[in-house]
Length: 60
Image (cartoon, rainbow, N blue to C red; front, side, top):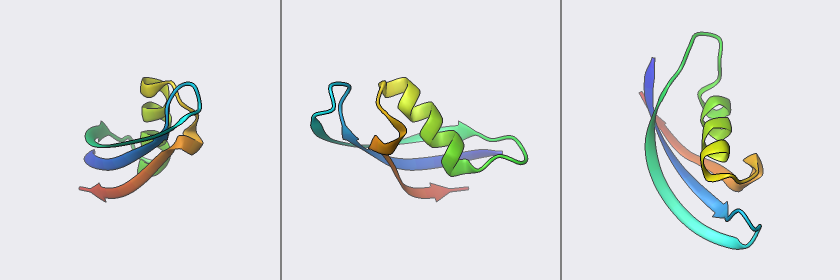
């Protein structure tokens, strides 16, 4: 399933406060939570901890 995730990044790689809002399409496989998959992918892409990624909205 393909969903659109609206998210916010609250800190940069150095741990300093930051504010970035964006949207991205994520491909999901059955049995996986959209929020968990999105947080993992976004944290890896931006090189920030998962706690810095906030999911705002999920569109299907």
